[in-house]
Length: 99
Image (cartoon, rainbow, N blue to C red; front, side, top):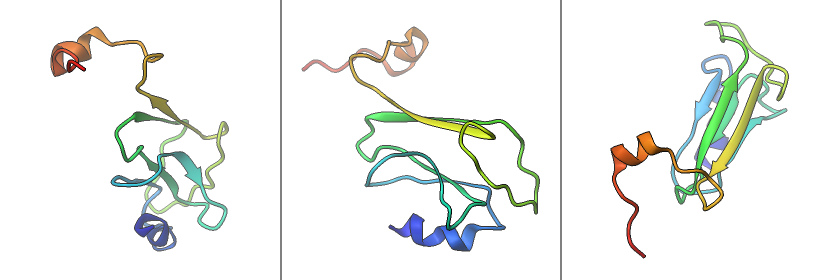
């Protein structure tokens, strides 16, 4: 709720807010009430990774009207049994915990 309340104050200062903490994951929200700020937050339980692609580079002092599939895309990739394991990441984090 704090991030959502902050969004109107962020317009003109930030082009994108990367949230965190408890709560629902938002892959990417270009709110109509705050069109100049792209809001992204992960799943609060760590079950997903945000994948955000910006098709343009924001310029300082310029407001962007974010439009999904036009100048950005955003998705939540859930880390479940359907997500393929990355061998390089497995080497970094070690073996999966035993159930």
